[in-house]
Length: 103
Image (cartoon, rainbow, N blue to C red; front, side, top):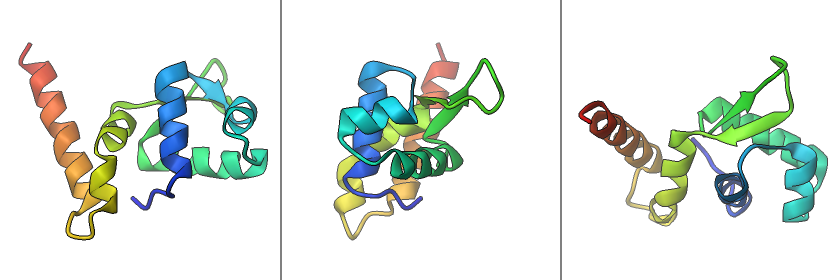
C-alpha cells in the first residue's frame, strides 16, 4: 500500500471528519485538481482505505473504512523507514476486529 504524502492522508482525514463525499467536493475542500482526486480516491478504494457507497454501484461517493481510519491513526509509521507501514495497518485492523468481536 503506497500512500501518497500528504494527499492521501488529507483525503482520509477529510472523509473521517466530514463523512462520505465525492471527488468534486473533496477536490474543492483540499484545493486539488478533480481528476487527480478521482485517481487518488480510486487508488485508496483499491487499497481498502475507502469504499464506494451507493445508491448506484458506480456512485462517485466514497467513505472511509476501518482500514482507512487505522492508516490515518498510524501515519507516523509511514514515515519511519524501519517500519512496514502496510503490516502495521493490517495488524491494527485485525486487532480492532478482534476487539469488536469480543464485545
